[in-house]
Length: 463
Ligand code: ATP
Ligand code: MG
Image 1 (cartoon, rainbow, N blue to C red):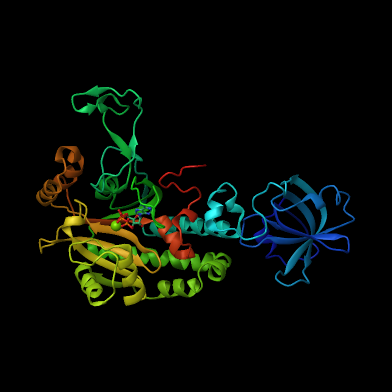
Image 2: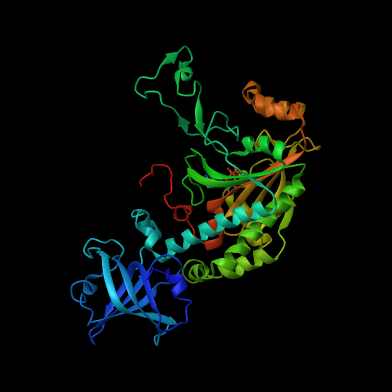
């Protein structure tokens, strides 16, 4: 008899059938009547299954009574309608095979609830908790939905390089990739001689696959990347990681409006997908993590996003009378508190903000005719703030070169990027969505460190 995943067994109604399941013990209660209730969990869905292990089992004393929380077992038995509350079926065990015991004196995950912070110190075991298991399933669903969304719309999945020599955001804060001996690097007149490094030049972990994606969009029309990106920002916030996963679609023959349409459709698709496929997990988040999250997600999936310009956003914030930690003024970037005020207080729905000042945006964004702003957009959502940043790209060679000069960038270094504007240049646009921010949004999890299996943050790379 082959093993079945618990989520499928929980749906069965063929009482009397023999089933085999395997997993880890969530709880065990021993009844005075000489039998035990075991809740076994295998992560296939939110719920575990209840097993009744009778005292008559030949290994009841030797094994069943040693199956403490965290122990692993394979159990065969008869599917039975459950008289108890909270489950429809249970398994009356005919065979219990203890596979791996977990010493109750030492196993750190006992029945009492632990804080998410404490769980971070046992990241190798936290996937066994209700919350982190549910997060993992939602994250998986969002990844799968991402591929479905883009594949259904004829976007080609592109693998952008992880090691790069260019800084896509033009802003530094990258991790260096080097094989030079840090104790005695070769030197020249200018300092360390990276000409002798592995790649014969300075190289870094990528902050974005966008520049590479643009080259393929200008050949294959619609592409998207989905991979890890890295930022060496020393920001210890609840929404920044040093290593995170980004999805970056790029479309040829598209402007800022097309871009915003795609971004909004994509976010709604993700939310709808999670509502349709992760019901049990969402109910858990709704009850224990963020009350009302299901209603909020349903509203996001069903209603249009607000779309306003940056200039309008600044006006609204100035009129608000709110005292922000960072003062609002035209020309300064929106801070998290401003983003959240707009989406939570002013509009109570996601907001797409467009046309930001040229001064603090990246060199590749298309300059608007007003001479002050660029065709950029951010999508903001309640609870999290920015989840998407994107733009129409500058397709005009002379304007792009001018932007690079103003931002103090080396044109020679970006010769291939400029070539795209020399040969068959077309309007094109794209954006980046941070996967972890969307997982936060869909689960209500407060800290980004709890929505990725092994978070990388300043001073933390254990596991
Ligand atoms: P923020 O202002 O929130 O720091 P950003 O403007 O620097 O973000 P972009 O360069 O626009 O971010 O990156 C695109 C998307 O990638 C963001 O909208 C966000 O969802 C995600 N993202 C950016 N930086 C991080 C980070 N350090 N950790 C997790 N996600 C991130
Ligand atoms: Mg941004």
